[in-house]
Image (cartoon, rainbow, N blue to C red; front, side, top):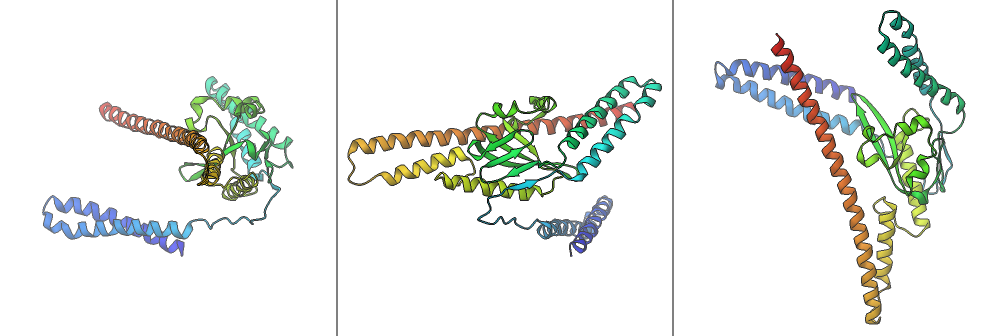
Length: 325
């Protein structure tokens, strides 16, 4: 069924492109004669839009259902595809180094050799940890070979990041933890280098980044298991998970308790004490929400600047090529 809709979308797209070209050609001679072709182009474009929506609806993943009593442990391993890619990287980068050096391309040979050595060390790390779980999820926390054991009480928020490059998607689990430096110190030297500020978005610099690519379980399933186990921990400490942010949910739970503690017969001093605590908790929640909004805004501005920079680069490149002719 999906293939039929894809074929229909491609056909409509071809019709729309041809109709637009014919409309441009006819409109130079007679605009009235070109109106039927314009109608075909618009109709085909609308058809492409709705067929695309239909394809997305048919191909969207089914909701992940985690059993309510699931407590783990869920052991997640690296897939064999990781080893194949690392071996390919070692061969592709290291094999041509001698030939590049003989041809006088010394800088290129050094660069390829560096990438080859990095792939080689990554392969050694994979072989050393082969058979060991990459991640372990249970009701106590999450355990990784990079950061060690992270209790759920240390995890303020957990977000699934998706980065798309052309047709490929790369998934990362970002954990916002209290005192992240304690966990950063557990990382290896090369991984600490990868945390250079200019390599990361502002909203991710204080997060523990865990790659979820090429594992024994799908990234969406891992994300659903993390959310389920964190919600279980929140309920265990008397907090109702509402926002997914543990510190905000704790403050909201405390606000609910204070509101329930107010009785009509209480004296004025008790009411004033409750109001004072409510104001402080409300300010804490507002401050944290404002901080998240500022981070999101800063991230959006940086992405916009990068996008505009790429557009300017492309325009200057085209202009330089045209002016060179």
